[in-house]
Amino acid sequence: MTATGQKSWLVTTLLCFFLGMLGVHRFYVGKIGTGILQIVTFGGLGIWVLIDFIMILVGSFKDKQGLALAR
Image (cartoon, rainbow, N blue to C red; front, side, top):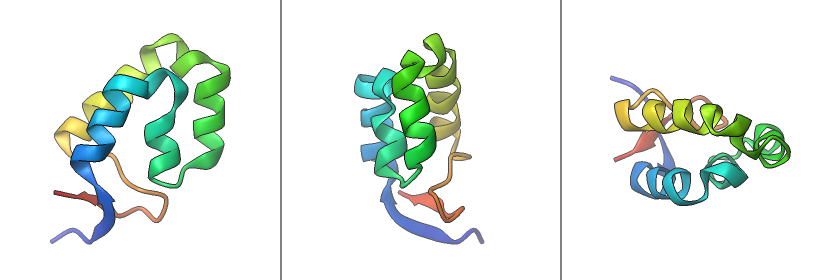
C-alpha cells in the first residue's frame, strides 16, 4: 500500500486543468521551485502541463514529500 499525503487528487487535477500554465498545481503540492519554472516557461509551452495532467490522472503524481495524492 502506498502512503497517502494530505493534498487532494481532485483539487490538484482541477488546478492543473484550469491553471496549469501558471504551475498552480505544483505550488499546491509544495513543489515551489518547479512551480516557478512553470510560470516562467508557461508550463513548458504546454507540454509539461500535459505530462503533469496525465500523471495526476493515472495517480503517479506525488507531493513534495513523495506521497501519493489523497483520493
